[in-house]
Amino acid sequence: MVEVTTFCTGCRACEKICPKHCISMKPDSEGFLYAEIDQSLCVDCGACRKTCPQNLKVVNDSPLKIYALRSNDDKLLKKSASGGVFAVAAMFVIQNGGVVFGAAYDKNMCVKHIKVDCETDLWKLQNSKYVQSDTGDTYVEVKQLLENGITVLYSGTPCQIAGLKRFLKRDYDNLFSMDIVCHGVPSPKIFAKYIEWQSKRLGESVVYCNFRDKAGGWGQSLVLVTSPKGRRLSIMGPSDPYYYHFLAGNLHRSCCYECHYASEYRPADMTVGDYWGIEKEHKHFFSYKGVSLLMLNNKHAVDFFYKIEGRFHKVESTYEKASRKNGNLRAPSKSGPQRNQLYVHIDELSPEEYFGRELHCPKVLKNRIKALIPEKIRLFVKILKTYVYSC
Image (spheres, rainbow, N blue to C red):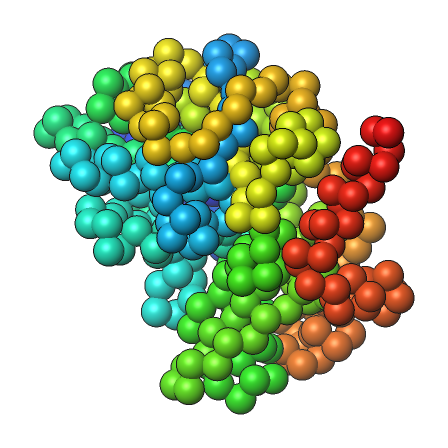
């Protein structure tokens, strides 16, 4: 067998299902993992093709329930990117003897899926990591836990959840899956270059990166933390080159622009994201502290949410309202105008040269002004405009 699929997402499902262990994941020139087959070991059994979620989509029907919500625990809410749905669900699972899987930074600032089984480590999985996570051996680990009767909550991008579902081959009552409203994933290589560049600029190693810091309110604030002095640098997202090009669609994996799951029909039991546009769709429910979108995509999810809904302030919504400002619930991100050039010289240039010549922010006055305005003021202006237009 020459290839598993032409639209590989790097989920590792094919690698983990192969009975001959002849598939390995290797980074391409852009730094994205792709399946590579050792033809000398392959027996052409077809297991990889049958398992690949890109060859056979994994989707639920239309969501049964959709909510706008936020945790009623203010401390937990402050640490979350939006309304705290994942954190509340994860805490419930751990408190009841289960385990949680999600994306976390390792000591080298690489993003990998890990298992967490205690509340004190849950912070590692919170907040957005705008880079593709490596699922590693977690699919195999999840299957072993499920077979042993352990409850598992697995969070990730839609394609990662679809890969897990295809690998497992059947539903488990003790598995709860949660996908995110995904904008697309940049490569680990370009993220590593970014961390190296920022570390040199700051004169210290960057040891933590939070793309959705809430110190100034719910929005798009980036915070970098360094070591050993523990410096904390706050940046308005659109004024940062990596953040800017991520939002512009210039950094994503090629298959992200043809994503099977950027629609109403999702692979996971639950879908979570920011409820962008809440100030228009449910004005009274807006909060500077953040509001999450939650889609319950099957009865399994509805039954789970029934156990934790008392931990939230909530209002019921609809797909039409929720997707109006969440474009990736309707269609994949569009390829940005610089997508095909930004990875070309990534290996040739130093971090300073790369971010000076290739991956820099356009010097647009609007972006500069935005960067100077505190998040809370920008949110207030959005709400004010909404009320003015509705009068």
